[in-house]
Image (tube, rainbow, N blue to C red; front, side):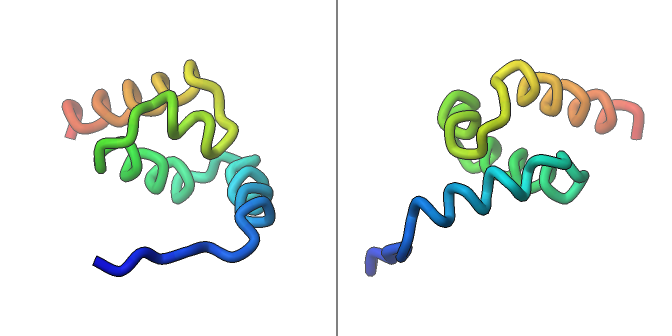
Length: 69
């Protein structure tokens, strides 16, 4: 499999962190997809700059919404 390289990783990091500042539902969904894909909550937290406790809350909220549906 060909390795894809991101140009300007620091710029991408700043972009991701600024995108998540509002914690939109779309952003939360993307974050949950990262977790679902096997990324640890710790690594996702470090990547996007959202606290671990917030991520736990998002996962909890998602699981509760699924049960109510």
